[in-house]
Length: 496
Image 1 (cartoon, helix red, strand yellow):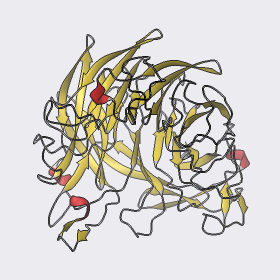
Image 2 (cartoon, rainbow, N blue to C red):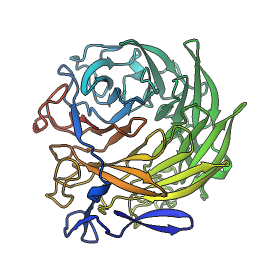
Image 3 (cartoon, rainbow, N blue to C red):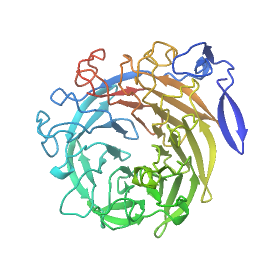
């Protein structure tokens, strides 16, 4: 066995008890002088199938792979390239244009058998939305509906910032279907997005929403509490159907300001009736009956209140500076995972992890803490995560991992390559989560940030890992992985 199991207050914690695991003495960025790989009996036959790059005409400095999304059957892949410099607009616009730095784009690929091919190059129709377009995105179950969040959109017609753009596919033809904006002044709308299986319900997070006071007000006056906006589609028309706001129970104690920032990450159940979201120091759920309503929450590591003594107010002008976390949810809304790559406050002793919660009887119960077998304290394990539809497969990105060996389950104590990155696959076995694969690209590169994004298909059989810092100037499918002439070109890797 790889994992021993320690139970504490009903929580299953993966511990490093050896068993049949492979252990070797090492140094590098590991602690406990141990580098541990999954037991051969527990490994899944997961191998790199495809190396995906932007098409030949696209820019080689687009950070392709900053975000990835996969359809349920694993046959449609959307890849965000938020620094794509083409100022052209619309579906299949000119990728050779270089008129607008950081305009962004989304590339769509489709798989037939084991062969991947480009299907579409998507840009918004509005120039205001051409700002780091592709930074957040989600696909419906079939892959025929795509939503792209654009929190930096700042159309002067509206007293708010941010938008979400919806595209729809019929056959192989993509069209822009809707340009979603909140009904009230909001801030950073589009930071996170989620879709139901049928694509008819969308949730858009706005973590700096100020309760309708508009974008001309700073986020801390009045308090920056955040919100999630729900939109529904009927007869190809979209409308806002609910605004979900954090209850006062999520407010953090503060002598000056409150910074809940709900909506930084959002997830939606397959039927569109359960929404999970992150706030500062909490994960919360909302449910839809006759109307949407807050259901419950569970605490997460929360930052300390840091005061700048020179001005007597909170650091960052918000009181709390919340650490980045990631979020995933099973299709039935009963399993929720939260990635915690950073310590709650600078200087805290903290091991990166993923917390698993069971949602039952309107309560969230923490059931497991998942950590990598090889303890790598500076890898930012949990920066991005993805759950399979059943909630029994968990993909975890660790973009700062410095292991220098490539492939599936390579030596974690090999040569050091700064910020090469890594990804992990875990599965639920009874009550315990087991590490099934430790993944790298075939060619390990400095500052590739492999694991900067991850996506799983419904069965957990296909895993896509984004590497937005990949430096190969190759284009298309399965080009030269060893090239290093184009820093931050980006790539996506398909494992099956």
